[in-house]
Image 1 (cartoon, rainbow, N blue to C red):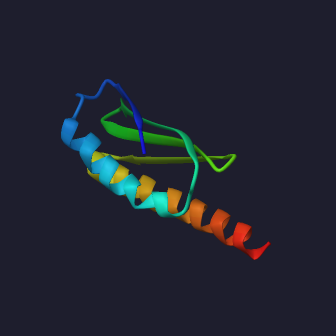
Image 2 (spheres, rainbow, N blue to C red):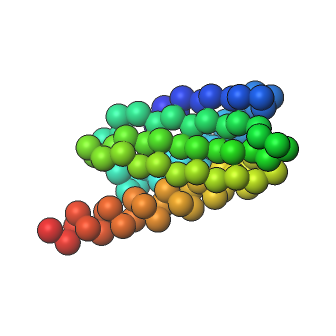
Length: 95
């Protein structure tokens, strides 16, 4: 999955990108056709605000998380996105 990253007022981190790629790779088992994936990190008042927008299987999925640590933000995004995708997958499988 190709992820487009945006860094606002935060130092660009190659390690952060690799960590995010690893975490988002686990999500790919819930979707088949990923059209786009955008992840942004912004520093506001000493906290990192992380957002992800995923367009897959004809549906948009969004998740936001805020924390002082970038890795904790990524973990939170993965958890929230996984819940959304699991619910979407279950609804689709029920039909």
